[in-house]
Length: 245
Image (cartoon, rainbow, N blue to C red; front, side):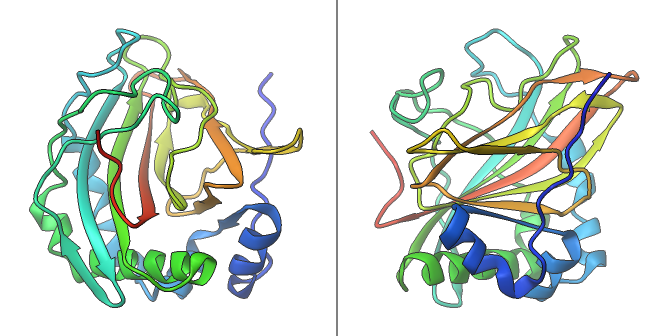
């Protein structure tokens, strides 16, 4: 028997910032996200096919073959989104005990997606949220497309376990899930025992996290049918600079 808890969606889009400040996280329905970011459902749906073209992640230290991904970096200054020359993804061991301390070279997000006006609009909105939370400033943004599949019978969205990302704001968008069980989202108070668990199922629903206040993870997925998988877009925003060796 699989128990599933509904996401604690905010009551209205206006509750996003109060929720982030009070609880350290906020969960938006797809329609709430689209309203706040001024995005059309059709433009978001057009991106979904790009998750079918993700290369294998060859850096998994647990030997798994269950993760595919692409990665690109940006700087968001006010209403200007600048694509940064392609660079490796790096985290210290402090934030990623499994994959920290090494440069990971992933293929960039495809130019068609990055060339969409909707992409810039999404990043500008996240920059606004981060500035409302931390104060107006440039934001160093990393965007990750993930597909977790059940090729090996089990897929691990967060093989490093419950963690922080070492940034200021994290946004986890569910793009889609099919033929799986599991993939439960868990958010914990970084300085206490309280936490919440729920499962995102609606495409383009989103979890936003104040990374200084909470840690998070997603539980492993198992197949219900052949080809079971879970797709997400994870965007992190950090003040001052990117993390680097």
